[in-house]
Image (cartoon, rainbow, N blue to C red):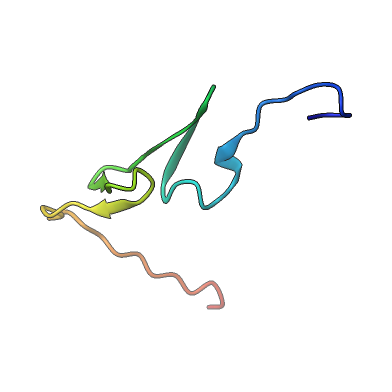
Length: 65
């Protein structure tokens, strides 16, 4: 409710805990999706690495060096 007179849709994707990877704002809620190599868990919010993660990479960064 904006100014107690007008309703505005809430973008639930702005909440970082909505989805673990990708979030798509919908008219009545939101939908989570995953990057390639991951699948959406039963909770429909968390992405888990697929079993055949043969091309997996790990990136490590030390921004202080």
